[in-house]
Structure formats: C-alpha cells, structure tokens
Image (tube, rainbow, N blue to C red; front, top):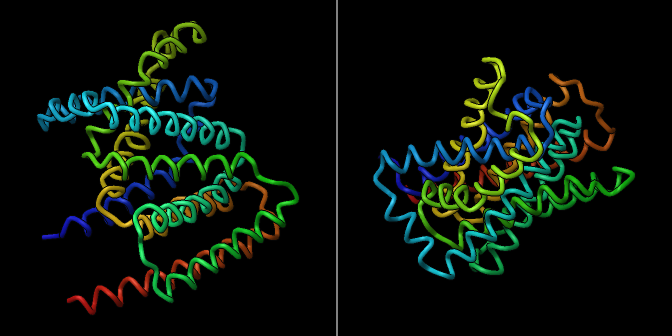
Length: 292
C-alpha cells in the first residue's frame, strides 16, 4: 500500500505526462480561437468535476469552500491564474511555440521551490542546492541566448507556479477545488462562447468536434485533479523538480514530432536541466533507501 506522499508523487508524474503530450492534442482544435478553446476546456472540466464529485459524495465539501471567505478569496485568485495559464498555453502551442512553452515551464519549479522555502520553510540539502544551481544556470543561459526575452514562456511558467502555490494554501481535496474553480469561471466561459461563437462552440459541428471536446478531459480535468492532489501532499521543492517532466516531453515532441525549429542554445539548456534532474532524483532515492 502506497503512502499518501508516494501517491502524490505518482499523481504528479502522471499529470505531467498527460500535460506533456497535450501539445499534440490542442492544435486539433485550432479552428477555434484560444479563448474559445479555453472556455470549452473549462466547461468540459466543470461537467467532469460534477460527475466525480457526485460519485464521491463531496458536494458538502465543495459548498464549504464557498462559505469560508478566506478560502473563497484564494479560490478566486487560483482561478484567475489557472485561466491565464491555460489561455496563454493554448495560444502558444497553437502558434508553434512549444519550445518557448517548455522553457517557460522550466522556470515554474524554480518559482515553486522559492515559494516553498519562503512560505513553508522547505529545507534543501547540498545535492538539492547543486541541482537547483544547475537549473538556474541552464535556464538563464537559455534566456540570454534566446536573443530576446521569451515573455510568453516566462508568463506561462510564472502563472502555473502561483496556481500550484494557491492550491497548497487552500489545502483542500483536489476534485473539490477543481469543481469550485470551474463554477467560478463557468458564467464567463458561457458568455464568451455566446457572444463570439455563432454556434457557441457546441452546436452544429461534426462528430470529430464532440470527440475532441470529450478528449479535453484527459488533458485538463484528469491531470489537474492529479496535480492538485500532488500539490497538497508533496513538498513544493519535490513538486518543483517533477514539474520538469512536462516541458521535457514538450521539448522532445516539438523536435522529433512537430519538427519545430530549435536554437543552438536549447541543446545546452535542456541537457543541463536533465543532469540536475538526475542529481535530485538520485538524492531522493538515496534518502528513501535510508528510511527503509
């Protein structure tokens, strides 16, 4: 039987894999604009969350999130950052900027670890500090060599780090948070589709469109629940390094599948980050072996 922390680690890895391969999915909906895709993504997540909450009898838990003013305020903040992150991500992927997205998401763990050190007093050992130093060096080199500041990538990385931090602050179960967030944003999503999409993004399409809408669950609702669970059960410093899996998958798919143009600096930035990941992983395995 896995401990809650081990379950959190597995959940985080699974969420990162689904988000990583998601760059192959979202371009299939590129006939809609980015905000419409975001709106449909949120609406589909809402119905998925309602189903899961109903099956797990958690409606009272969801209601409790709205009754506490402090929690509700934090939920609204988390929802804002979720929408900003998803919207900018969809726009970037559908604009052929998957590598910039990867670079941005490599910044997310750095911000997560900084927040963990500042607000939760997470302690880093020597190997972890070395690993973080390598990441800082690799990402900094990538940004400097980029020729221009990758504003979109940085924005994506920053918004997702804050989103993960807010989940840690809220400290509620993952599915309840997801339903609460989608309830908050649902009216705005429906209004956007009503005024901008002649068929509301739902009516009058062929079967493939509806299959794609159903597919958003696998790259939105499911990984978000997994990530939310991980965010409240795993240290932010540990969570931060696992978050490198998704951009690494993005990067590899962008090179070998979508054939996106690669800058020479990327061949230095990404391997340096992967070396840091290896150091941190071996350190974690060593500590786990000592415990057992």
